[in-house]
Amino acid sequence: MNTQAKAKEIFQQPVTTSVIRDGAPQGETAPRVVLVTGGTGAIGTEICKKLARLGHIVATTYRNEDKAKAWQEALKKEGYTFHLYKCDVSDFDACQNAVKNVIQDLGPIQIIVNNAGITRDATLRKMSHEQWRDVLTSNLDSVFNVTRAALNGMLDTGFGRVINISSINGQKGQFGQSNYAAAKAGMHGFTKALAQEVASKGITVNTVSPGYVETDMIMAVPEKVRASIKSQIPVGRFGTPEDVAHVVAFLIDDASGFITGANIAANGGHFMD
Ligand code: CAA
Image 1 (tube, protein in one colour):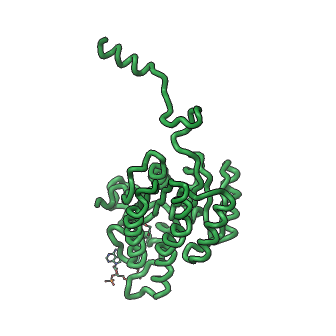
Image 2 (cartoon, rainbow, N blue to C red; image 1 turned 60 degrees about the vertical axis):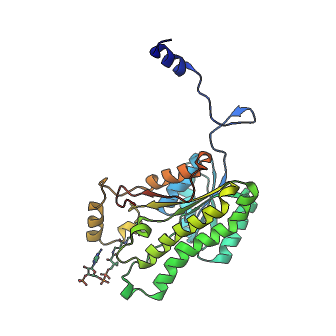
Image 3 (tube, rainbow, N blue to C red; image 1 turned 30 degrees about the vertical axis):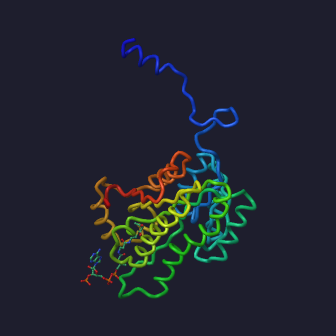
């Protein structure tokens, strides 16, 4: 058979799905219960939407009641059902309760996206203890609080995905962000340690480090500084929340089980490790 005929034969073969469950062809990834912290923010919203479109059951934490209800209503109109849980992720006990409630309502949490985060930018000589503490507890303690509470459920089911949303500034540092850079770098240290502890249990732990993404956080940066940052991004634009959600969707996929302890950058080439 010549090459052309062989190619034709291959292309005419029926397409098969790679995962067959209960004899019926299904999607490649099983639907799972996902907890996204800080889902009502710009990046969090896109992560929630993306994972819901993949068929997952999505729960999210929030702090501001009015904002969260409006968010839930607006997304309902777009066809999304999200499950909301009031929880300050910097508070250990609040996280234990929220995780317990999600499990009771929806079933074991198999995917966590530690996304909640804040900035309190100031040069160190002006930084208050409160600015330091708020950023460290909201951005780093939160990762321990939520993951610790949900991990046993993942171990019981033999499947888990922990995704920590860090930042380019955890990799390269940033003027005015000693608190934020320390917390974000700490997240990846956590990723690497936990990844080793649970690698043999079907659980992967990875960090995603977005660069500068078009969100309120970036808009809070002085205009002049923002323009200078943009000029340093080789692809010539800020990132979008979709750019980040895309990486999360890839990492939580059943087929991504060999990727663990990694730090995936989505920064338009702004920082290359
Ligand atoms: N590098 C070097 N010097 C700088 C500088 C920089 N990037 N930015 C400011 N300076 C200098 C100024 O020119 C000034 O110098 P002089 O004293 O010699 O005149 C001095 O530093 C100002 O120091 P101050 O402590 O007085 O700074 P300030 O109070 O005016 O403002 C700041 C400091 C609030 C940190 C402000 O610079 C700022 O907002 N910077 C942006 C920080 C940033 O990029 N944040 C990222 C937010 S987005 C995010 O975090 C999401 C993510 O994950 C990417």
